[in-house]
Length: 122
Image (cartoon, rainbow, N blue to C red; front, top):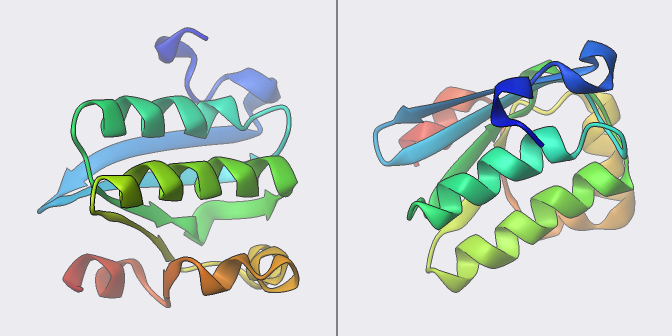
């Protein structure tokens, strides 16, 4: 997938911004993270980890939906980063997205923060 296409695939259903704040690489997905859009988040995460990022923060405040494919993207990132001694932090999950993590038990394997600021301060 062309990296310039980030945020345009899936009929604009997902847009992902990537930034650096302190020692954290921050991913801000907005829209729907599902089978059709998962690569839009998976590719920049993989690129960041390949470049040496070991502390990833995902600002979920704009994430309206996440299915099992999206969850698997985050779980895969967690495994890769933890192998490097780092971690994946999730911040500001909306109730519908948080419910997916609760139902699957995935909320127990991530560090979950109520706000992005809390995730960045830890």
